[in-house]
Length: 150
Image 1 (spheres, rainbow, N blue to C red):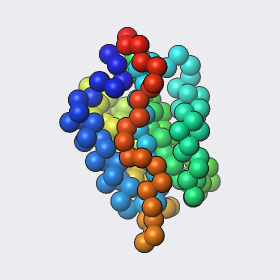
Image 2: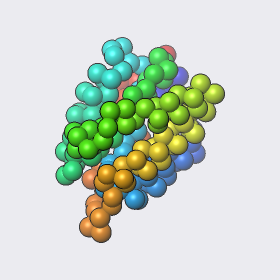
Image 3: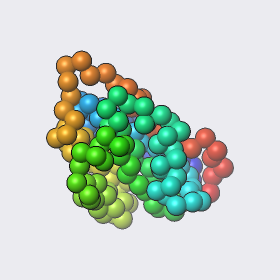
Image 4: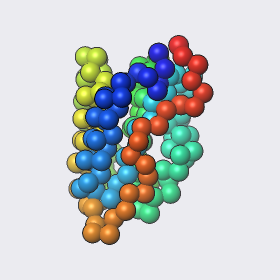
């Protein structure tokens, strides 16, 4: 399996539409990144990737990365410092638990899409969209660039 082909083009479009819908009501920025495999701690990898793709450069520091490692069947949700300073501990736990349940049912597209929409709902509580809001990050799914297949 390869990250870039795990989801069909139609499934990828469902996820991207969820990102756009989730961001419609918030100034927060949501990205989904999928890797074939993660050889290190998933949270460490997600945090490294968060900076690599420039998510820490949003004006309000309100980016969210949902990172999925396919081979290990593991994922992480990482929020930037602006979010983490405004929300209580365990803020992402409900989303994580919901996604884990959907993934355990083999419903990966639904799990990601619903997780993204849930993140958008939570973000709009703390970071509502303003009239002059601009989309600071791409809505497309990013994939690992060193795919070798597994």
